[in-house]
Image 1 (cartoon, rainbow over the protein chains, first blue to last red):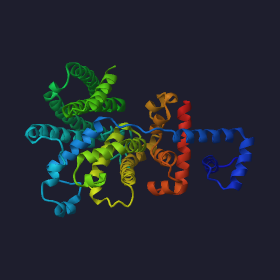
Image 2 (image 1 turned 180 degrees about the vertical axis):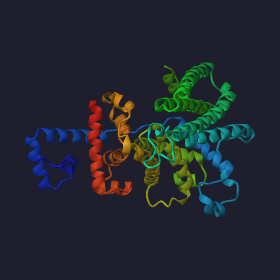
Image 3 (image 1 turned 60 degrees about the vertical axis):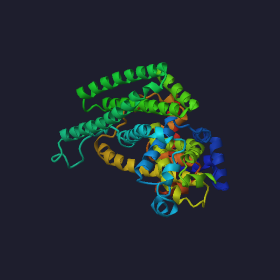
Image 4 (image 1 turned 30 degrees about the horizontal axis):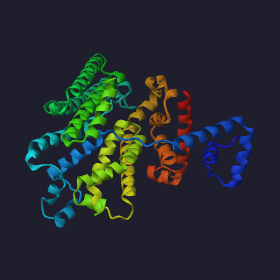
Length: 267
Length: 172
């Protein structure tokens, strides 16, 4: 009789008591099927242990930093928490010390721009990107609900959700475009041209997938395609804003990494 | 002044240093747990914002890296639980009358995916158990506690994940 799955699993993990392990060892030596399973399990364990860390996109820190500064500007939350905030330091001292290297005279306009960027990015990433087109349109209504919920209602609900998601994405894109366009003189002409080329390709893809959704509102692939194209455009605009930010900070290495990523995407 | 004290004093540069030290580990965990680089990036942002807000209450009982990892893990688990609750509502209706695999997945050339990509394709439930046990190194009892499942379920989910991965990587 073959060992059960749990036993083979534990055997591959090396967590079985010695006596049980010896029994399975004998079985595995004689059973091709179980030996293959154990070999595969061990191979998977080895591969899993060799998985490498993944570096987050360069823009990730820029987004976090801007969100932190937005919070500091709004004063809604603090790193010290409300209680510590009340008794640890004079009012306003954290706000000043937490913005090292930002010249007061040049701050106001830039602050407005980047606060706007942060608000847009938070909107885009925390609200819009979590939208995943549901499959409700293709699925039946819950059992027993047929009389109260005609199939058309589900389709309308999906269309309504999709429209809301589109509105979120379009708002986010609009805000990012305003920032990118206003600050584009910070970019060298070749980089700006690359960005424009990429944006034109994405805009074309959005137009096509939008047309597909309009002609087939219940099509899951069409919905997915439209959302993916929105996400691609937002990611590119986020890269653009991050690039402008790195260049303004004089971080040539950070800017070079972003430009390199943009070139890869355009090829 | 140490790094945590500088952050607690409002030094964003110090927080960036903390980010640079731990971002790859947190991002990797988030991507694998969520099964998507896009979601992983969002989670990374949320985790570090939460860390920034909560560092004031960090007592130094463990290293800041350990504290951050636990924060990240809990945040990922909250996200997955929330997503699963939504998915369960949906799949209840699908399971009753339309049990099928999405066509797009059936046609995907999974034989060429590397393990990282294959992990992303694992079903909810067994992916998290696999990541926590085989990649992050928790034992089944810990995985069960983290995911709110029985220890036996953790074992079967990890086994299921390994077999699915084998199938994916062989193109079955």
